[in-house]
Image 1 (cartoon, one colour):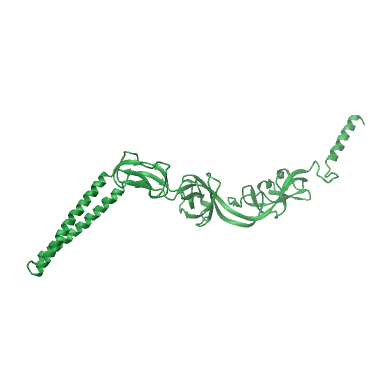
Image 2 (image 1 turned 180 degrees about the horizontal axis):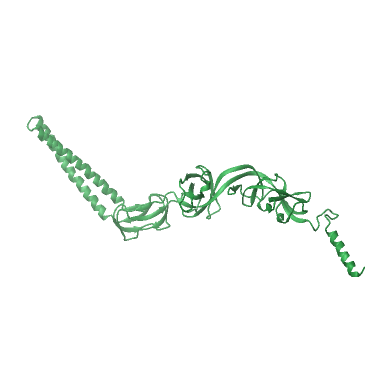
Length: 370
């Protein structure tokens, strides 16, 4: 045998020795596939459906002029924080002041007339008792007195209206909130009904969440909804307060409304993520999502037994946040391959690099989309 053949034989023997299953100290050697494993676990699993919607103000009144006049002062601008009763603007009150003075004068005038007519009626009643005047004359005096009394009431009502109009020249906020839009400008003449300010309330909000029509039969009033906003990391829980009975014509989605108290700096018009809890699986078997791989037999995962990967065909349920529910094929507490599962076949030898006690702690709320 020549030297070349001897060298080839030597390398072949080295390769055979390198493919042995274990060394003398019982450690895996080259040939076993390195993997990480995690124990499957059983825990309650909420089924949720997500929707991205919009925050709305429960109250967003448009403040309009109730009397005509020129805008003398603007005391609030867009973005101003306001309290109920704060003055937003002041209108010229000269015209309504003159109307009030005219109403006061009319009340005084008819007051004098009714006083005089009352005394005249008393005299005529005395004359009638002595039969000095006819009954028809007395009746005329009574009618005139009643007419003047009605004039007094009308004049007093006009005075009250004029005094009320004087107060309307000061435009005040009816709510606590913020000025969303300033419409009126200083020096502008406004008529009754002209819009002056757009306000929004911030303490109480409403989330409008569109959902596909396939969930119309599952969503009910009173269901729990978890809301989160890009504004901060807080999660606010609320209840479905209203479900729109008709779907949108274009999207075929229908709106669900959730009322909530503003947790801080959430603002109307901003986006909001809502998760509606549709139900719960009390004893769901959970594994990491990337432990389930596709094979010709279907969805499988690999369970480690005695250093080998045992292929299990599984049925899966809901999934989200890195975990997946396994409805059949694996039991709680079994060691399931995570990293390296895509390189395995049934009965392949494995070398465990690391092991975790349970799937990564994901949110217990899992999507019901599957």
